[in-house]
Image (cartoon, rainbow, N blue to C red; front, side, top):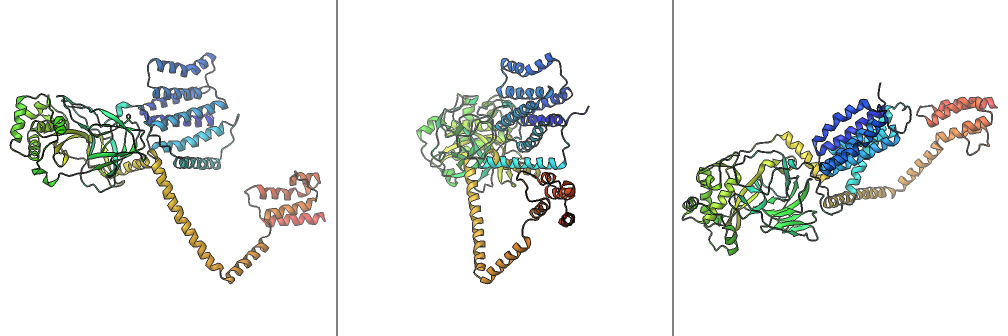
Length: 619
């Protein structure tokens, strides 16, 4: 038997709700077969016990989720999905459709909190269209009237208007600068690309091409950029130790640190860490955070990891190696010596090798000698075979950037040169469509910084350069569309809103200026009396020939044929019946009603001809 239209529309509406859920996690697509399996059972369960069991299913699932310690987001989302399926199966009254609609709204709101997908906008439009259609169909208790193409067109236009109105509210409603929402960690295993833990072992590394961040610079950068995340000072022989952090609060303009340098706008994807990144010497942050944290090396951290895309401005400087650094001399401050010359207990063989490589050379010469040794004796590989840093350096083992950078720092420290480890990202992938840099998970990198008197910390990368892969122009075009979604929707904040209002104000001012010029132009013509006289003459002619509206004139003519005592509450038809002139005037009344209330075209000449013939019969 063919299902009613409202059942099919409700099924589509529930599928749209499930699509919202899949934006957060594709695992929710498993619900789609269940709703299709429930389709033949719709309104077929009559047994009272089975009905009660079905109604109790959401409660039973909730108890099971609590006992099994299911993650709250998954528990709530699956609970809502099961409720939709049960409501769809059981016999439905009008209020049940309303409840399905409300549950779907809750699912959509959950999705908006935890998703950053550009598909959300398309699903929102479908949600408006089919949600409105379902609620309209639910108003008919029995048979639904035949829906015309005109009805669907009107509903489609209504959905477009509602969609645009929603976006208008989104962009115009005052933004509250209470800090970014952290999002919901629904799939922590997906967070990849950067780790605060820097361990030197022989575990393999898999490259991940997922995008971690996008960087919009305020200056031309033609070279490879290094994005600083964390500095490390102390190494215990196996891993680099993290530094203690403290809370810092913004000034009145939401600035942290030194914000008088160059600025890059960074759109940071969920990384599973609380680290903020900036180019090279990262010294300041602007963003709508409640507060930040900062360690003793000057690195910035959020209050907790974010699981939504956030936008912030990173203030930093890109500095190349100074020309006079090769011959620089000077005293190293005592605090630098105490912190950045510390090494764990190393073998005599390692110590003697370091001294042999750097003997009799300047600080800069020692740096170059260590880099040259690592390039010539060690091999870059994502599948390392070194059991330790000493094994990597002495026996020329395979390793990746963490092995090279750690060996570089320790060898320089053994040679009396202060050095430290830095972790972050390095990239040169430029999107010419959107004019921004792309940073991927595979771009995670570690390198070293060396302290030189009079110059401070200078970056050196001891890891051999790897071959870069190029991206197709089509993929870059798609990513620029996604970036536009992030810029204009996901990270839309107070500063963007104020900028938009300022732009609208400038545009309005330009329009006002243009209108003012038009009025001035008209004033010049009005000064001529001939022009004013011509306008008055045209107006008089129009008043004479147009006169009253045709519909009003026809109404008055028909009224004069019936009589002069029409009651205010009577229609022409009722008035004609009361005056016993309906049979005589019914043809004229029919034509008038078609002409007045229908879109069918009735020539005025035909009405006038019928009116004259009736008037002659009356006389």
